[in-house]
Length: 193
Image (cartoon, rainbow, N blue to C red; front, side, top):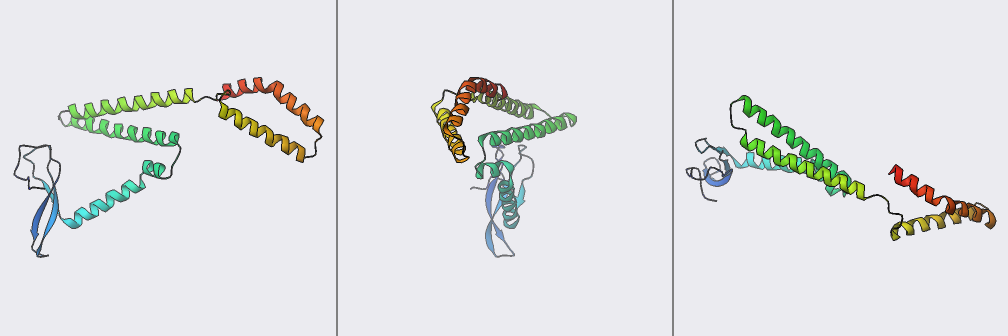
């Protein structure tokens, strides 16, 4: 990238690379400079070794992130969403802290308030969707997949009763009772989920 240190027309630039001559190494090296929103502020220049250390720290931090770990370990979507909610809540707390700090220092709070409002909106939308999904994920006893699971469970139970030495007439009595009680059982399950 080009050297933008003297270019104050675009203060939103937050970083750039610059080739400089390193006298000690007798060669050109890239360094990273960051430019603040205030174009009059002097940019910070980092040497390559400091930049490499920062990249390593960042990569290690990302790898150790709870959210990244959940995704990489293929955690359940519910656990991932819960982690996202925690991450958003943490960012909201940081934004509120920065906003309050800006107020106490007499600085503008416009950008931090806008970011916080957007994050609050995202959190609220996520919580609403999670609640809707939870309500809609109730057990559907008419679902063919659910019926197949119950059928397999009943076959398993039947085989277990046979292996336990129960005679066919006793097993039939047990299954007739299950058939008679299944509607009440479905209602209890729906009430408890």
